[in-house]
Length: 125
Ligand code: HEC
Image (cartoon, rainbow, N blue to C red):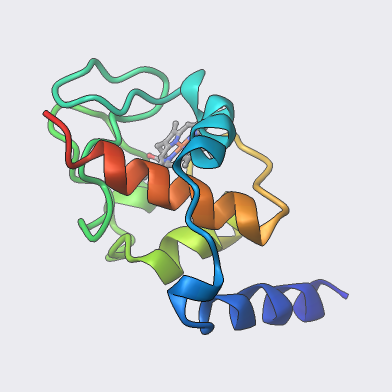
């Protein structure tokens, strides 16, 4: 069942982006789930988790001054859309040993929108 879910999830990412509506406001709503642990503004303080400004397409574990788990630091993952989606579906499955205590997002639309939101917020300064 799980495998099927993941295949369905990823097939959605192969559709042309204009078919999926990247919705900033919806992404902002989803981001409320991340807010307890993450900031997004340029130069904002790390919380339980690192600041996420410009995290997209950056290597994992690179936010200045944040103490990552070994698993994250050594992961060699780049946060492109595909990897970040997989991480957000199930963080501890994608990076075994991550200290991000988050169950994961279930809906493809939530994942797409929150990534869009993070990317847009990373263009501000
Ligand atoms: C309960 C706290 C918590 C919540 C909620 C949470 N995170 Fe995290 N997040 C963390 C921690 C802690 C880390 C560092 C993980 C590590 O070092 O293993 C992290 C790491 C990350 C990273 C990797 C950052 C980097 O610099 O490599 C991304 C991306 C991320 N989180 C995105 C999100 C998003 C998007 C959400 C909401 C959908 C979210 N997180 C919800 C705690 C949280």
